[in-house]
Image (cartoon, rainbow, N blue to C red; front, top):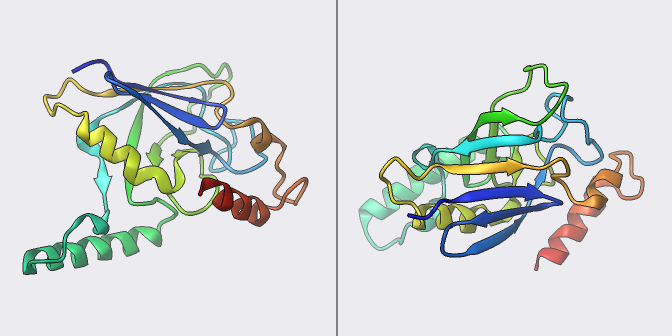
Length: 191
């Protein structure tokens, strides 16, 4: 298996999986907040992280074919887990922990941790990397290119500018957009 890695830069998560490259729109933190030291609001600190594919948490109830009793049970069970997780936050159908390897953030004081790569329905996160409704596609690609031999962890590089340029100009007070206007716009442009 070829070396796999991801880079989060300017609102894109670029996944090089050895035999190809895939791009996913991504964001981190809350709109209008660019300081990584602000807990539960700021973007993930720049640096290097590791994804361990065996730690992927999956509540994708849509993957089962409803043609046997076992599939109906699996769908119901997984849908129940999906609903339960929705009460904890906007996690999407897949999530995986990002293990810190090295921070490139000079004034890092160590008070932020527990970052994840995940999907979701709303714009932004509490500091995780959020790929929105593209989580099924991304995590399917991760699983498809996985050798399951314990050597295929994925390096994730977060740059100094993880969000797109217009993300930094957004203000939760509505200048130049309200979060709701931006979500409506981004849904329309996603296709």
